Length: 504
Image (cartoon, rainbow, N blue to C red):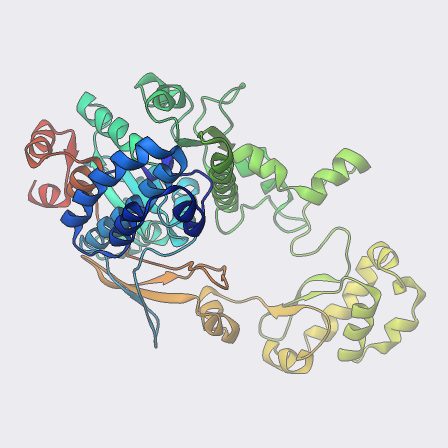
């Protein structure tokens, strides 16, 4: 009995209320049997009779009943799904289960995105328990599968970084039969997220207006480079381009040097986080309205929104931004300083922190210098102050300064390499590295979710999938296709499974 979880969003009625007020004793006992029975066939037989009675009584208990059964079915199918190539995740001392718990457990997402912004958004949602079905081209897959070196086995490390917990289904969207699969899957899903050039999915019948007629519960999130309309809307969008147009690259880099891109694709990642939050909000809104809606996110708007204080400086203070290296336009000292063997970043955001810094550096004479009495004066006399501070920091190694500064009331930290970052004692304490078993690569390491919940789970649940690993499972267990139809779709080239791709 495959009922889209998306439809099951009435306000939750406490069982004691609806059972005591509107449901006869026999019906109550049937519901208790359904709730606790492990024999699925017996449950389904009881379901048929119970639904007849509930339909005649009241809509709300009917919906509550459907919800109970749907959750049971979701758990049953999830248990079966985890036998299709998923594995437990562990760190050095603990093994995390792959149970389908989490605040988004029961939410199903069709992921039609590639590269980074979309896959990052769906990975964040999957860590929270959402079931993510990643749709890929049967031959090419996600482009990032080939973005290397480095590779781990046959998979690129790039792809492995943002595709955990997902099920991969290989579908050819150029075939009518493949499009039909997406439509049938949409009826069984809560969210669809895509990052095609605006208008591309509309032309093949998979746009929001087309899908909402057959799946009104569907939340449809589009990620593009520049938005669904406007002079640039048909342009493809990559992170560094949007960061360039949006001003980030122009303010990044040394003060007297060339513009630089940020070391990781922050515009992509921030867009993914915006999309993740927008989807969560739309899910809450659907609880109230019962309907899905369209969401549009784009890299350029995200980047503009993230210029924050620099944007406000221009809009309200008529001040153009410039490159400052690691320094801050409005706070001094707030930057990296060279030590004898590396770099140390210091932040002094107020007068008390500046006084503590001077005492730690044995430069208390600076506290008597009127040029540095306030932050505004320190900004004005930046060059004079930095000469003294830089000379002092060069006298010791980074490690020596870290010992001296331990317990200081101002923020500080070394500029680490990636290896040093993952060896940092706080990173180790926060358990930011997890190990998961990949079906073809073996053990791989993943960066753990950064957010902790007091009573919910936000965790790695399974390894990134191989191409087409879950095609047959999704078609049979979620959409409900027969073995004969699945075989026909494979023969037509509309879909492919990992087994078929390995043998081709």
